[in-house]
Every structure is written in structure tokens, then in C-alpha cells.
Image (cartoon, rainbow, N blue to C red; front, side):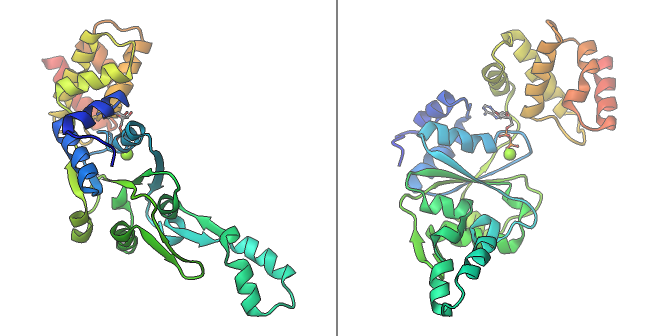
Length: 285
Ligand SMILES: Nc1ncnc2c1ncn2[C@@H]1O[C@H](COP(=O)(O)OP(=O)(O)O)[C@@H](O)[C@H]1O
Ligand SMILES: [Mg+2]
């Protein structure tokens, strides 16, 4: 589809798009391209699941179409709905016409509200379809997603069947708040993204925070890793490492010692009990 002939080649394009993939991520991205299968990226918040989809779009020059999932997301918001308000207005001027004529009037393109799934299928140009945080939708909506992913076609009773011109590259993400259906998992290449290694996190920091000195990036990556190992309620993610790096730069810090770290723990941790635990540990060591 995109012309990558090795996993290393896909890693290189992702890196050029600002995303540092490890070998496994690069391999799954490569295979998804080769096999035409969706990627299901699962893992804790803030480890680079959503940004992977953004990077694939940037790396392949495809437009990104994003379906943000939430509880209560339904077909009307995921696929399409009719613009009732506009239809009603048209009805008023259709007085005297037969229902058959009216129907032909108001169930037309002009009254169709296209939502992300339909947009991705009907797109003239090839797209990356991001179905973000799919674990938040109800089973019913998950079944609808399955249907779309199976066929890449949609039947709108009043208009007919639309078949995708280009098969979208699909990335689903999940924060694992609930188990997804076996059927959905079977359709996808599964990719667990975990916290990065110290070295990869250091490189992510250097990439995303341009003014950060190398030694500080290394210290930040190591400190964050040691805090993750404390069994805190909410471990700091890559997002928090990046926030912390920017905080330290803004404060003009040059040497990240225990005192500075304790003084800025609010950026890394979101529970008072976690902050106290980490502070104790840092001051003792
Ligand atoms: N491998 C990576 N390369 C570059 N930036 C990354 C990487 N992983 C995470 N990030 C950065 O970390 C932040 C959080 O990533 P995001 O994709 O929003 O996480 P998630 O969707 O898993 O919650 C973003 O600012 C993103 O740019
Ligand atoms: Mg995300």
C-alpha cells in the first residue's frame, strides 16, 4: 500500500514524522500495511497510541479521519444521520407533493450528515482512520464498527451502497477499561504499547522538547522510570515526562536533583498519596 518493504523502513518514516517506534511497533505497522489489517493499539494512557496513528498518517501522506469514541456514541454520530432540521424546512415547501416525490427530495446527499466512518469510506483520497479509545463504546457500537471494518462498505437504505475507493489504514486504540470482543480482536493486529525503555524515552524527550540537554533527558527518563516502579496508583506516562521536561526548562533547572524532583512531583503524579510516596522514596535514597 505505502511501499515500505521492511519493518525498518516503516520505523524510519515514522521517525521522520516525529514518532519513535521500537522494533515491535515498527513490525506491526509494517505488517498491517502488508496484510491490510487494522492495528489495535492497547496500553496505558499517554504511551503513544493516538500519536502512532497521527504519525502513520503523516508518514504516508494520508489524511487522518478520527472517530473519537465515548460512552453513548451511536450510529448517528459514528456513521451518518439525516439532517432532520433541514428536511423539515424542505417539507414545508413541498406541500402538495406526493410522499414519493417528497422522499426523493429529502433523502438526498444535500440532507446527509456524514460522520467519520462514512467519511473514511467515501473519501476520494486515501485516509488513515483512527478509532480512538474504542473501549469506551457499548457492545452495540462495537458490532457496528466490526461490520464496517469487515466490508468497508455502507448501505444507506435511501441512497444505496457505498464501497470504499481506497481501503483506509485503520488504527484502533484502547485504554483497556473493558475487554473488547473476540470478534473485534480477531480482525486486528494486536499491539501492546507499554512505557518505553529509558533509552527510547530519552530519545522521545529529545525529539519533542528541542531545547532539552541530553544529560537532562537521560536523568528525566531514569527518574520517571524509577517512579513507575514504585507501584503508584497512577504511574507517570510519556505525556507526564514531556510535561516535566518542559516544566524543568521553564524553571531554568540545570541539574535534576532529588530536591528539584520532589518540588515538581505534581507534574508527574496525580494523586496526593502517590506524591507523598514518591517524595519519601526520593529523599531517602
Ligand atoms: N514513540 C513516541 N514518539 C514520539 N512521541 C511520543 C511517543 N510516544 C508518546 N509520545 C508523545 O507522548 C504524548 C502522549 O501520546 P499519546 O499518543 O497521546 O498517548 P495515548 O494515546 O497512548 O494516550 C504525545 O505528546 C506524544 O507525542
Ligand atoms: Mg490517546
